[in-house]
Length: 389
Ligand SMILES: Cc1cc2nc3c(=O)[nH]c(=O)nc-3n(C[C@H](O)[C@H](O)[C@H](O)COP(=O)(O)O)c2cc1C
Image (cartoon, rainbow, N blue to C red; front, top):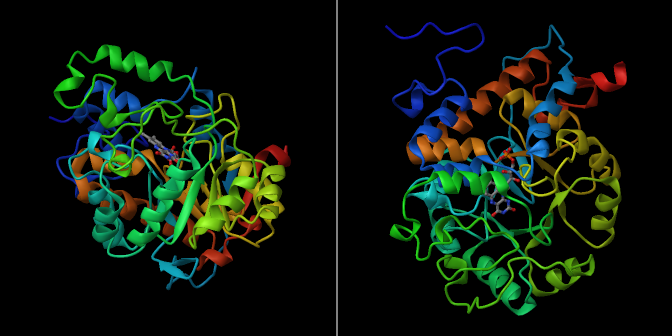
């Protein structure tokens, strides 16, 4: 007989046989952990140093509570969202996550098919394990291209032009990892993995799931296949705000900055011509002992004052998390690990079910607060308990 679950737990996480059985995204987390080799699981699950920022991303959501409203006609709900002239079914965005073949053979193409089926925005990593052309084709429409700046502007320009030619309409420049990071937990998982990496990777440094952001660049990554990556850095420690203009001069794509957390940087981004901002700490994988990103959204949104879109990611696992981010000023909300759990467990079907679960949970939060459209979700839809105290 199956173990009887405790209150609030539902089915014991991971006790599912197919994507459709998942009741929340944590069901997929449990399956992914069982399915993936330790090194690949470690690459995805961990943060940096003692993982305080990673934990803060989750913990900080508890600071905010929903303010319910009653007797609103919620028989018709509209969760659709528009960004740069494109309409999406809901505000859930699939964040750029590198090396997705390390989680499922369909990798980014599987995620793209799910994004297409559900009508959601996908952002593709520079470190993608499929070429941008294949992913745009699978999505059947524009995706955004996430850019690691590299330390050679010529090569950066080549990457950007290739993404633009493939049909991307936005480039999201990641700026939160200018010069390395300490991935000690990930390295512990690697040590626990007894397999010989070179069986699947072209070299033992694990280039299929190359986590060395700020380190070297590998030819095994399709975006670098035609580029000589010898000695090339994936990011550069010397870049400053003028990079936005340089980038805008070589592309017609909208330029969004990923990895900002403060009002100062939000204002500077706008001054320098950014078309959008992603409030992000790289899922707790960049600067340690930072704030949870949900605590940064209002600050950034207040500086931006609705002039450009603000997307937020980090620790989003529930529809109520998405609702809180929207209430605090986000235009859209990104998920990273949750859809990778889905992908690792059941490929495209898993990603689709993750989107479906989060959509359902968001809809219920909206119903509870009497907000029928994303626009109706405002700062009065949540309470900041840190202020109330
Ligand atoms: C395994 C993994 C790989 C990632 N790769 C990239 C990347 O290539 N580029 C990037 O800008 N962000 C990358 N991120 C960060 C995500 O885009 C996103 O900011 C983060 O995952 C959101 O937090 P969450 O995982 O808690 O939802 C990665 C995150 C993970 C977990």
